[in-house]
Image 1 (cartoon, rainbow, N blue to C red):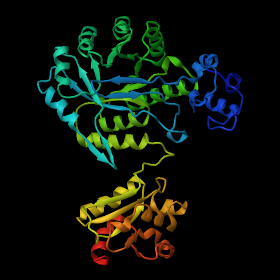
Image 2: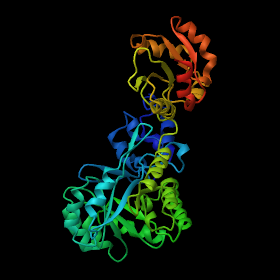
Image 3: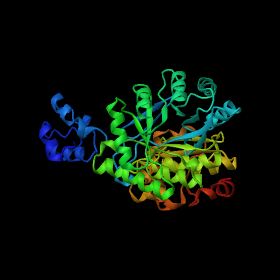
Image 4: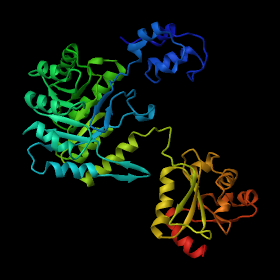
Length: 436
């Protein structure tokens, strides 16, 4: 049973040491009760209190990890309903549906496994495969393992799942799925070896079944919520999330699996599943045109809203710049950096790109916040020793901060300060017309 903030406070050292990051033990206790901090943040809590607080410190949605031969996918451990409240932690895994009986199984798995696309400096891939064991399970897993090391979801009856699990060796796959008719057999099969999907026709029946399976020793479970359409699935997913977070209802405190592959519009169903709380998502087949927007959507939802995506400050070489090549300046917000870098790279024009530490903000935002001013730009140019790389000391400011040109001239008296265009897309034309 969850403890209140006051009850938690009574179990803390009550020294107000502030080492947890909060001004008082009471403030820390309130955050702990709200599942917004970890108990490990308190360095002085006693072992006896740790045991008593274990229930309150446990995440309301259990962390479930699927392990393949060389990769891992985690789901759960979430503490908020909405991203803006804090952040979402574990991105839903995107799995590709394949069949053991498919004569092209190896080729299909290899093609999906090799998929890798870069988005603002990050590489995206598929996360695993959902293998339907409708043929020789051991042979199929051997075939899949010849093409990928990613985690597996095994789909089949009890006999097929047993054969598949045996062939997985020391991996931790997800077995699909236990219902009222086979819960005992699959619980015995999964115990200590695999995570187990549980499904039922209603949330009440699902909660009863998870408690029954847990009593048999299975801790890692995943919920199949069913649902006849998008609306029903969304309603159930939201109810499960709310019950787990707000009511601390442990019987439904598990990650959720979604099957957009069964929906009329797979893309919409998958996007809904990413946005509304799925932990594992099964797609019908490997389709890059569907996968890429889903991966980008997932990345945007699962980034910390308080920590913008950033690149490392420094001097970046574009198109093998020479000493006479111009020096461009921008901030370390990833989208800003890649907008500038991609435009210049695509033009074939060489340049030095100085990326300043603006705490991940875009040019205008950073300027308004005082994180991108003449002093910081000059400090970056001096700190990265840009002068030693160029024969002509000429730096180009983003057009949006033209107002800084005078101050930058004062900071860098031996440099020529030029004001570039306001938009990155206009940089190639500016470089050709104004810098040559």
